[in-house]
Amino acid sequence: MSEETTRLYLATPPLIEAAGFAPLLDAALGAGDVASLLIRFSGTDERANEAIIRALAPGAQEKGVAVLAEAAPNVALRAGADGAHIAGCGEELAEAVKKLSPRYIVGAGDFETRDDAMRAGELGADYVILSARDPAALVERVAWWAELFSTPCVARARTLEEIGPLAAAGADFTLIDDAVWRDARGPAAAVADALARLKGEGE
Image (tube, rainbow, N blue to C red; front, side, top):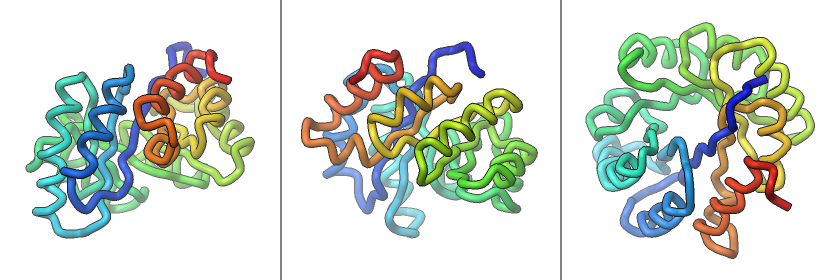
């Protein structure tokens, strides 16, 4: 189990453009210590996705947030991201590691099986995202990973309430997405709540 404090990894919803989302992101990142940001896209047009990264990444990076793009490595790098996130654990991930490591971050996930997570770690991913539909199963999987592997583990919390148990299980990072953007209190309050839960202070 990691002895260090679990940090927050924030993921955007799938985006088609940046302008409408930028104020929400600014509010979320201004609420406290966010370690990393995963930018996701709803379209496949590389130029449009690069424009989204260029619009959102600098403001996050100025706050010390590492920006990953859920895109091909060339898209992420051309637009100024700190790395790329690859969904699978096969050839695409191997190529990304070969192209980007160690200068840039290469993440992988999110995996619902232990075998896929282990395969991603063996290929050289800088972190793996673990997820599961059953919160208890995910806590158990995170504890297993933290005990056996040195590759950082990102645990995907579907609700704010899941954050505390995942941190206690040994996750290096807890990823949160929809629970922030759909929170009726606004993204800043949701991030503040998430950070409190990481410290064991949440409800």
